[in-house]
Amino acid sequence: MTVLAERTALHIPPLHFFEHDGITYAVDGDAPNWIAVEQRGAELLRAMGEAPPAFGALVARYAAQYQVEAGKAWLHVHDFLTALDRARMRTSSPTACVSSGCRSTTPATSPARTASCRQVPAARRDWRATTSRG
Image 1: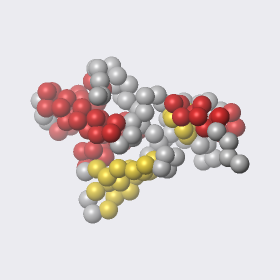
Image 2: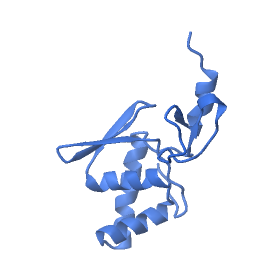
Image 3: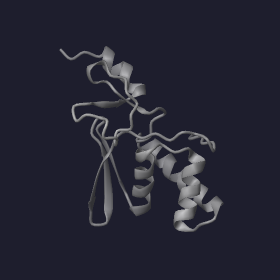
Image 4: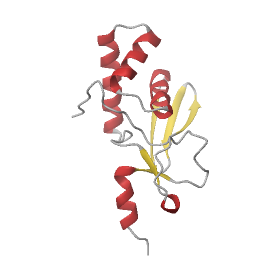
């Protein structure tokens, strides 16, 4: 069960977006994992990817953007985040760079990241460091 409080930080892995026939596809190449969402879902994902907001801030932004009451906005955003959890597209911590020992938590969309940087959620960082390929 997803437990979300007003100040719960929302993190997603770096995603690649593309659209086809009005549906937006968000792909996590490191997992590999993907989801297909409609316009509102895509806007929520992009907002979470730009600068991870707190749950309450994302609800307020959604309510203002779509001019819905706060309770309805809370329900829409909560249900969307629950679906992201089921799809394993939401992480509990910011992504971390593991290229050449770097441990940067700079947002993946920031120009400060280099193209060769490989971003892996911090929760998976230790697993990848201890797993060897023969």
